[in-house]
Image (cartoon, rainbow, N blue to C red):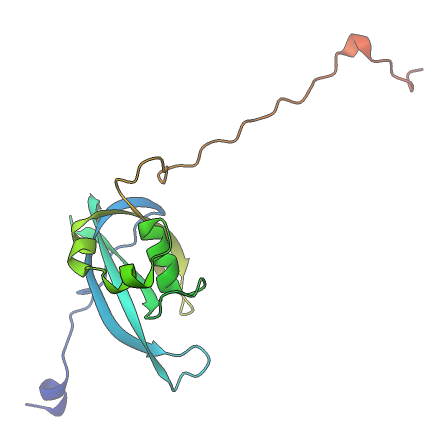
Length: 171
């Protein structure tokens, strides 16, 4: 057996590829929260710890009858208003969590609930098109519309009546 066969793995082309969903809002379940690392934006030689939240659709399927999958990458720090983890949890819970609530979060409870995940199509730096999670809301949240945008009231502009207006440039 070769060095690579002993120490590596071979993946069939397309084996881990998922189809891209159209931009929109989908009912999903949280299937996994993975701990990982990624290169720091300011110093690529430094690896920083991250979470990867993985969601799977329950109401829509791709052409191979598989659920669509969406991933959200966050840091591991909660509390700073600009931190992706804070933004994600604020969307999921509809408010900021206290230190005690954050410490008591139960992964199994998060994974047992349905979520409304809004995604958009995004082109990466390498040119690959992927789905990007824009927001995650509880599926059964009352009083919140996440599936559509309410049309703005269209104001009718007054139309001049030709009989009432005199044309000063008329010969």
